[in-house]
Each structure stands twice: as C-alpha cells, then as structure tokens.
Length: 209
View 1 (tube, one colour):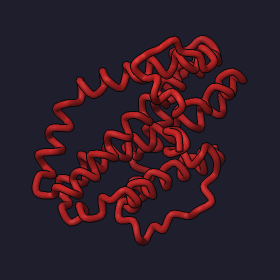
View 2: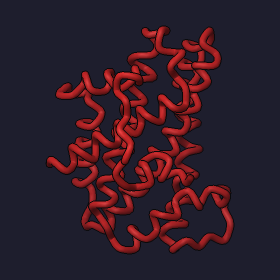
View 3: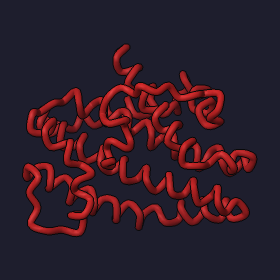
View 4: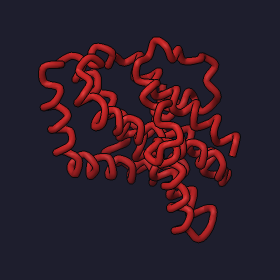
C-alpha cells in the first residue's frame, strides 16, 4: 500500500465505519468541534492563507501538493512515536520531549524528501536518481490528477492531511502528557482508525461547504 493510499483510504470514501466507542482518541477530536483550535478549522484556515499567496490554479496545486506530501510524511513520524510510547510507557514524557526538541532536524529531512517527490511528480514520473527514489512509488497516484490540474482533488486531500497532522499534534502535546491511562491504546490499529476518522470527517464537512 502506498503512502497516500495508507493515509486517505485509497483516495476514496471509506467503506468501513470506525467504531467510535472502541477508539478512545476519537472523542478528543469530536469534542473540539466548534472550538477555534479544532483541527479541521485549522486546516481550513491554512488553506485560506495559502490561497491568498497564489496567482493561479496551477501554482495552488503545486503548493497544495507540496504540503500534502510534507504532512503525510510527518504523520508517519507521529505514528511511529505513538507506537514507541505504547511499547515504552515509562519513557513517554522523555520521548515526547525529545520528539519536540528534534523538530527542526526532522522538518529539514521531511522537506528534502518532499522536494524530491515533488520533482518526480512534476517530471511525470521521471527521476534520474535521488535520495528518495526508493519511495517514489508512494506518490505515483498523484501524477495523474496533477497532470489533469484537478484542483478539487488536491484541496480535498490537503484538508484531510492537514486535519490529520493538527489532530495528531494535539493528541501528542495536549492530551498524552496528562493521560497516561491512554498509553495502552496507542497501537497501530487505533492510530489508523483515528486517522481514518479524521479524514472521513474532513471529507464529509467539505461536501457540506
């Protein structure tokens, strides 16, 4: 499964409904609805700010595409950290602190990978060799909508990925440091379900706008 398909349910509607009662992280997301720091509202704001900086749809797509890939790669770091916390609960606070301290270095690494993937897509799947070659297949399915200039496709994907990133950031820094009772639930299935719930929520809200 490629990176994009992993994060947004094969770029299509999710046929499986997440069981909100069995996933303790979903209520923390839904309770924020209407709050100024609600992840989906934060994603909408970032989109609005981004739209103010572009001159045309083509430029908007390129900016959206870059941010989508950056957010999706960043989300994998969150996922790995959550699992690591679950497996090393006595080190949870220390792990969170180290993750926070390593933000600049991590963003440089992600930005480099994002740049190479962006060049791969803009060159229609051609690459003469780069440090991200082994993972270009992860973004293969983005070439066609990029070539088609499908703005709505990328807006939808952008809002979903930004919502996920904001939600994971809040879970990590605002909730977990104060809720050691949740550490046992930081397993891959719960994280995937939480992530899917967020993107499904984003898709539904976008349809209502």
